[in-house]
Image 1 (cartoon, rainbow, N blue to C red):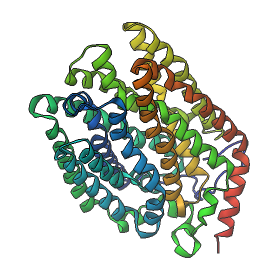
Image 2 (image 1 turned 90 degrees about the vertical axis):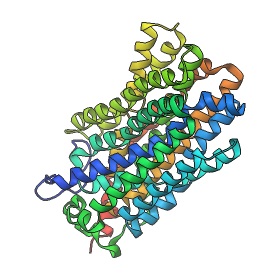
Image 3 (image 1 turned 180 degrees about the vertical axis):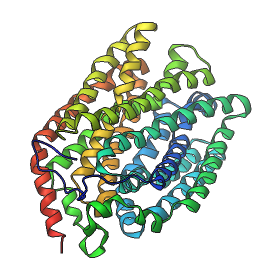
Image 4 (image 1 turned 135 degrees about the horizontal axis):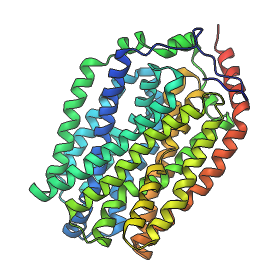
Length: 436
């Protein structure tokens, strides 16, 4: 990855790292587990109307069932990512997937709100560091030139998993009961993690590591970069904060679109879930496409990736409030659809910036910090804030308000672009200090 305006991060002598078939297998299986992760997380949204009626829950109660997962992810991501960097990323991922799958099965046994909240708490504990450790594992076997694309595609697994979880959960809930929705997600996760455990091992990942080619010193434990380097680089801090803020509105749409269609379009649970899934699919597709666009525009000047992230936020900021304000119809659907497509488009660029400005030996921890920000500022805060506002103003008014959070996100991302050259110099200083 090169730039005209800043010194580039050290690259392999050949300038390119060959992508192997095994690297794509690792990506596919890690992506599959991310699907399972979000299927288990978002199936709850599909049964919101059922739980609201059966247990007489308020919107705030429903929001807490969703946000407790993201809250635990936010609180535990960083410490568990540090553990994974030292104990082994692969074995850590296996334990996480088993835990969230079993916890999802426990959701099916919940008899009341309190038991469901406890089960969802455990789902959050299991999912806590999967995003950060999983993406660090994937990026470790691919060359930097693909990092924004892969980051966007990997993170999009959350949206695609949400689509499957919401649609399948809604259909199963209508056909055989909401409890079986959770059973299906839990069993799928357990089957997939068994395949992952057989195919992906620490030794095979190390043998195919692109980090080894780019930074051979990073593979030696005695040359590990200090954790403080992840928090003393202002450009990286901007990527953390900007990435978290831009997830706020996307998280709101993931959690509340089924309820939006149920209440304002008078759709049954399964139809509302299917309609919402279209927009969730747009969010995921946008993350992939925006990641590809970002890698292309950043080939000559890496700071253009920051500008791409700003552009994606701006489109959603303009389209979503207007779309939710208009009466239901073609114009409203198109504007909301365009806004959804770009809603999380900055995820790939911000993850690529974090990867390019942090040392490989602590990259899972760096991604853990990004995940912490994504969850605390976006995935946990967004649905909960909108749930509280919905109790007071109505869900539609709350959805119109949510995109305002893009304003501080844009400001932070622009600051990150300005600080990027100094961020690269700080990384080079860390790399030099850890080179024997």
